[in-house]
Length: 130
Image (cartoon, rainbow, N blue to C red; front, side):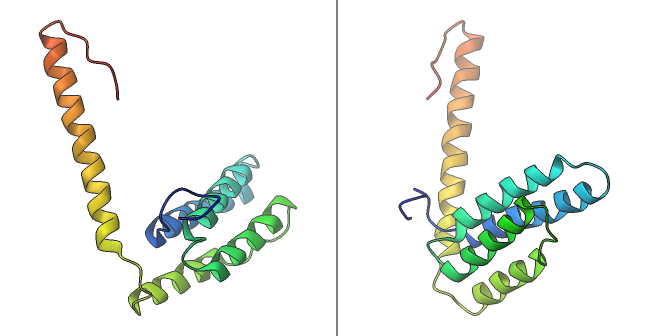
């Protein structure tokens, strides 16, 4: 966690956002100019997701994002994805298992609330959303 993001750094989320940015940047080149701004948004999310873990990677993503915002040719984002993958596989100290467990816990809590709401609706009761 850091001052700009209350979340723990997540290399998987970073790679996901960068992969989406790659696709959107390609679509922007193929005639969908507004997709550039969707890509820029994903790049900003990727930067925020990795900031507390690999500051140099966050800076590289930010630099690429600024190039995209200015309409320039964006550096190869897949190289950044590959760098993150290499660092994670070499044991960077991140705890992906606890991240996965936290996601599963949140999903389980949400699913349990949905089941209760559904059951209560069938009985004519209203349960406020959490």
